[in-house]
Image (cartoon, rainbow, N blue to C red; front, side, top):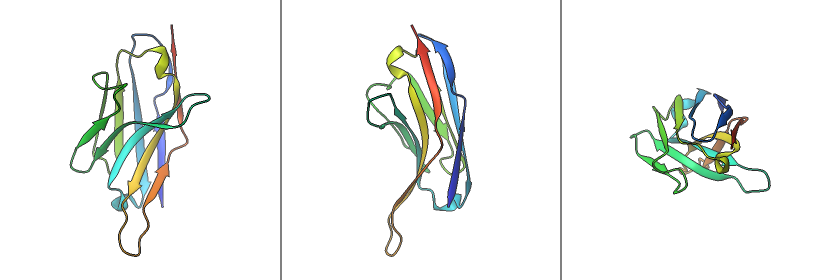
Length: 120
């Protein structure tokens, strides 16, 4: 089992910046990648950014160039969010993945979520 704890959400004005942090504990050796998802009211949860143990990063088109994900992708990651806009308002969730292997199912672990609100 892996426990994820997020911090760093809050209220910020449009154009401002926030940094989210996520710390993993437990069987972190099983983690192959970590990332951030977000869910706005009435919308589906969507991936924002991800990072693997090899430091490969991926971003959704909506945040590319504004957000930066960094960390070791095993025990902690961060999401630097710059030039925030109202459309970035959502609950942000930390995610960690365990890959499938024979006899071992793939797993997604989730944090409890942290609210990010961007005011105009």
